[in-house]
Structures are given as C-alpha cells and as structure tokens.
Length: 361
Ligand SMILES: *Cc1c(COP(=O)(O)O)cnc(C)c1O
Image 1 (cartoon, rainbow, N blue to C red):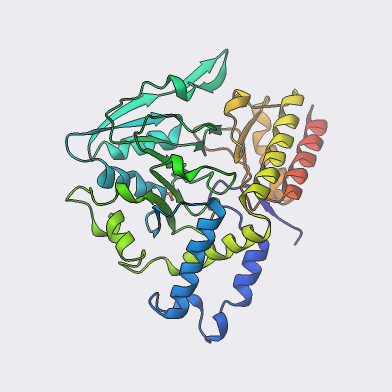
Image 2: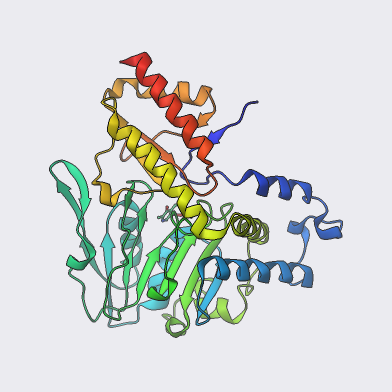
C-alpha cells in the first residue's frame, strides 16, 4: 500500500517513527518480557518512564517550576467540567470567551457548576469570519478566571495573541494547538489538552496548572478530577492511562530529536502558508476567514461548486489523502495538519487539489 496521509482532526496521525518504536517494543518493553501496558503503574520501571515523559514535556514547553504537569483521564470535555469544579469558588463568576464550537461547548458544561459570563467574539467582516481583538474583550476584573480556546479545531479560527487580563488567571483549551509553536506558559493559570491531536493517542489529557490555583476545588469535585489530589499523587491517585502516557512520552522524545517546538513551529508555519496560498490563489477553492485569525493546525476550505464535494472526497481518498471531510457544522473540507503531518503530506494534498481543479473547471 502506498503512503497514506491522514488529515483527520482527531484522533490524528502519529509520527511514523514513534509507531515503529512502539511496535518494536510492543511485547517486550525494556527487556521485561511484558508489554508496557501489562505493567503496574507503580513499578519503578514504569514510574521512571512516566517521570521522563513529564521532564521532556517540561523541557519542550519550558514549563516553570511553579506549575504542576498532570496526566489525566477524560479528554478535553473532562476538563470542561474539571476547570470550573477546581477553579470557580461559590460567589465568584468566570469569563468564557466564545470563538467557535469548542469554546461554546465549554460554556454549556461550565454553566452546570457556577456563574458563567459569556463573551462571544465572533464577527463578520464583509462576509468573512473574524474575531474581536483581545484588547477589546469586555472582561470582568473580578472574574475567577478567563477561559478561551486559542485554536478552534472545527471552525479553523485561531487567537494567536495571549490576552492581557490584569492578573485574572487565563485558562486555555489547547487541545488542538499544544506543542505546535512556542508559548510563554508563565502567562497562563492553566493549560489543558486532550492528547489525540498533537500529543499521542486518545485517553490521555495533559493539564498544566500554576501551584497557587490548587486547593480551592468545590466540595462536590470527584476525586479523579481534583487537581490537588492528582498533583499530590503524581497523577497516580487512580490508574492512569498507562499506554497513552508511554506513547506520549515517545512523541515528546521524537519532538526533542527534531529540535523541539521551535523547529516544528517553522515546519507548521510553512505547511499552513502553502495551503492558504494555494487556496487564495485559486478561483476554485475558498477559505473565508480573515488571514490574521486563520488556524495553522486545522484548515477548512470549501469548493465553490459544492456539488463536487463527494467527488473530491472519494478521489482524494483513493490516492491516500484521507479524512478531508469538513466537520458537519461547517461543511466543505478540512485539512488538519498537526505536528505529525509531514511537509510531504501537504505537498501531496496541494498536487491533488491542483489536478482536481484542472479536471473539473
Ligand atoms: C477535540 C477537542 C476537544 C474535545 O476533546 P475530547 O478529548 O474528545 O473530550 C475539546 N477542545 C478542543 C479545542 C478540541 O479540539
């Protein structure tokens, strides 16, 4: 079978080298004669690996010492509940910025746990999708925290500046953008990300939280969602997703070998530029998002003649370019090009798009 480039938004492609390594040690990990997934999370060999994964992530993201790194269950949506349960005390409210469908879903869940102030920043500029700049967000200076989603996976909208909140902790859902470019972690109170986009397989969620935000959870917080419980137990209060943690560790090693986040960011920038340039140049394809707010990870595009959608999808699939169908809420196509998508994958997509355009216009 020829090479397949999988443009799925999540679970997404993993680096081939990582999967080859996992395959090679699948039934005999580090000479134990067992698979890593058969071993106790409390065995010293497992704990050494788990600690190294954390250290590597700290190094990759330059995470300051006054932040905990938690390896959790429950995905991004689990954090939609865990964040208000842990950070929103009685009598306070939290600001939630809505820029697309994931931040909207975060609001719907958070409302179950406290007073949520919703700030919708979606805008329409001459028919194009755009966002209100963060300096104009009407934030509440007394909010317990501000929640936002820097990269809206479904809509292809990105907020690429960190908002100024005058001391109010910033909580960011980085599920589809973590590790794709350098960020200053110290500007955030809490960062979370489901693993299945840019970290590893599904089943694992990374939470990076500043120490001073721990210990104020609502009394009804389930123990497996309590950040302080997780921090006090090195993320092993209950059995963690051990195999996903191991695979995430391999992805971190892969990224370090590649030169870290700084290097992958250059490749990500190039991949996105090539795609947007090709879309903007053609009269056949369209992306109607203001350039400043375009996602570098999830690139939606539409065929001007939508009757060709099915043909585009079946022909792309046939040449090994898979999962290009856009999310049902926005329609059209979407190319998700996370860290594991090589430049060659984007080049193959561009070549297909040009040929498809020629054949059909
Ligand atoms: C995928 C995604 C989620 C949901 O993740 P689950 O792990 O399925 O709960 C939340 N937020 C964003 C930005 C996402 O891309």
